[in-house]
Image (cartoon, rainbow, N blue to C red; front, side, top):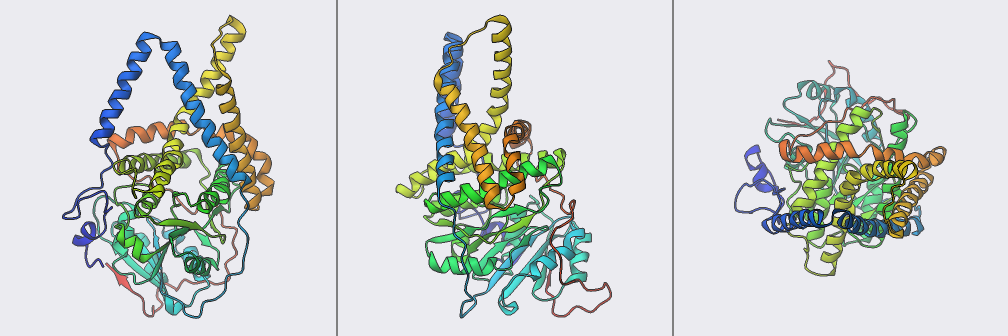
Length: 482
């Protein structure tokens, strides 16, 4: 267990990526072997473009097309996969201790609604500890939490330090938690009251699961066109794609919130990587490297989607940068554990992490280039020897993406948004610029955290209990750790 700030990095680090004898930054840089392969690839690209640029580009595009077709077929298989069945979650005879970690930053406006939402969790208060984790450099939020404190809520103040990231705050708070099971929520989250019970029962039925993911839905899908598309994207991910991967036993990237973990495996793999800006995805593949699997449960968490292009761009740039960091880090040891599960982990790393940022980077140029080619072909008679695989891959990818978007919306109960799935390709065009920014920041600002502002849209959940105390009221039994 952690005891102070000095022990933070020593006790919690990505164990199989760093030297356990001292404090070292997680290695998000490419390994020597990867660098050699990368520069050999650049040399081959240069030679191919020099000798016969048209033929080389067509062969390269054919390779990309085959990869895209394979991923599209996998997504269609996910759509065909049976929907997880709803079930009743029974109350256990003995409730283990459950720790809820909630890092917040510059979100004083969210404290009251946050505590109301978490107070609705159906779990014995004597076995529940909820840590509201604030930064020392954010006194307004700290004071807002102090005014509202009462059991089972506890305040943990993270000392100023670098990097100032969510995973660093989580690692710091771990020293005060005692739960056998741990989960994470964000400031705007509205978890289903039965979610902790569902996680507990699922862990009992699946001892091979080290973690599990609950679906994330958006309560403000109608706020803007962008929030509607974001909702469809999440519906496809959390109601189609992730359930399929979990059912097939394939390693999958956790979401940033509503992921539940056993304490033992979490500590064994070294907690969260404080230098990774998508610590959730990184943790998933470190758990898989130790042979652990990740499951899925149905009780969802409602969240707030970003509604403006600027907010969406900043958030997506961070996610893409974190995916790049995660891929580079895990390509140092891509085959762990060295068995068939290690092969599955390697393949999953490619099509759930690498393919995401690569497809975001190439989709817009492909579409724009295709439009320019079509215009030139129509007016100037240009003709390129595209093969059937190019058109088959593009068509199948578009159909697969729209299909899982519609199916995800249906499963999430967002049936009024089904027709909007046909507009998803327009949404995908927007991914190019934040991905390009992520690539630049990977070199210039690798650990910078683009904070998402919460509380912009009105919540659709009615609060039945006002949980906050007046500012001058006495607070019973709070825990404030600074």
